[in-house]
Image (cartoon, rainbow, N blue to C red):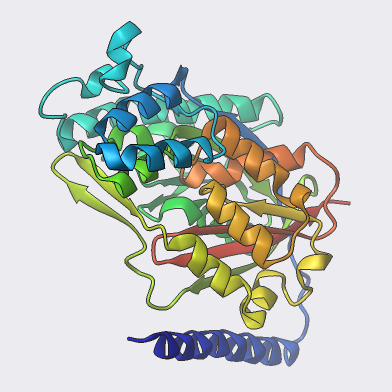
Length: 390
């Protein structure tokens, strides 16, 4: 398929988005206006593991790249905008840190998927509960009616949702939703689901958790693109409370789109040695291409245009992705300061990353009109509007 064919397909996709949106507005405008329940994101608690492995990984990966690719790796690593990344796995001490980023991976061959999932089953609930305790320090968590959990870096049954619910002592009647394998934009899906729950049941109090252990999936490879992809990822968890009681951020209209001919650009593959992440270098360019399309940009900003948005919570998937969003939408440098700060301090924690950014923004200046935006496997874009409560 040539560039003209892809452009035509992209135009058909955005035209379809525009047509569906127009038809939805026409149908809803013909109905009596019901009293709308607003869902509020009150507070977010965050947690990361104790082990900073970024420097150890850079040393290990730099030694694995073929000599001719080593300068490229070092240049890209230095430009990544990441100072620290955290893992549930400790780095090796002393000179051995040159050999592997964690004792778990010191063996040959590297551990299989079963061993990695065993650590996930133990460490993921612990990290998620630490995020909940950080949330509890900010807001009362009594009366939880629903639990929404997002995680794509591990599987266990009973699921992470059931384990956390039991250890928190939640009522068996609490309704649970587990969002799996949706990657970086799963935070949007989790918040969107919480919003739908609250709008259908104004008495609901929804606990939302995003928990990712990306460092469990280090791959034994010398491929430059794969190592640069792994360079981005760290572990982290976030917990949030959503209800109809005013406070924090009011959650606005969600939006979703899948970019055509892009399904191979971001993907996870389950292998015998963990989940292999593929993150194409084409991703920033495709995101930039989408955002310069006026219909797509209008969907992201609810038709207001980028200049009218005073709060940008963009998933920190990498420096080049943030650069693509900033340049394509002509945003001022300070617009993505919260996202860049999260990237610098934590790297990309998959679904938890956007929640870390929103947590910083909740503690910042009021937002009149905000947009939360994330990209992930597909290549898909998910987002929703938000604003500070009166």
